[in-house]
Length: 318
Image (cartoon, rainbow, N blue to C red):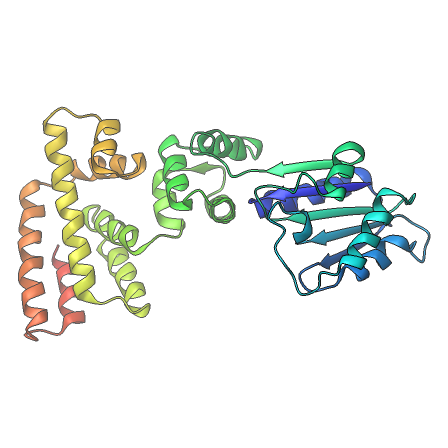
């Protein structure tokens, strides 16, 4: 049996291989992995043509099968004679062994002999990227299958932080399940999931407004260990406060959360958290701290204060 698994979602391909082996083969079957970018085709032919020492079926996972791709990129291990032998072994010789070809490619070469044979006598499975419209459904099903309750805003924020990368999503989702159990909130996503620097700043503000200055200082100190400069943090915190004030103005204009998200470019989760924070803090306090940051930026740039100490003092006095 010949399988060809192709597409841009490596994780889905790996999971399908596990399912194919689990559903169709015995635990005693001999499974061999070959990377065709590091081995010649002759090595694959030898494995495919030979029975296992125990007489059981052999399953060969042939990764990076570049010669099946539409553009057919060149590879230093490619040999026309060996390739012709492989085609003959697959197409013309009876063989009980199985090859599972994998290739990270959007299209296969429709004229390729192995592709043609597999289309008629084997299985070709495509793993496309999840579209923007499909992501909410995919995420909902992912947690539903695991009996996990997750807030709708938390799902949206998780999608935004994953940046439509399946590997990132699975890693972050599993972290949430591990640390937060069966009920996941938007706050959990902000706390647990990896973030860019702008999101860390958003987290600092959330904690300051929520009265958790110790946690805000911890986030700052973690950023300092990563090499973040106070002047950069001041600019980002100032921008975040300005964004909060803009959201406040949009609320006064009667805009709902979806409209605010569209106007600002924020995720729905970020808009939700911003509106939630605005209920906890007065505009005068935000404007006062914004002025403080402008003055602090001036003092740091003119070497009037210790930049690290001064920024931490700002956090304690917010």
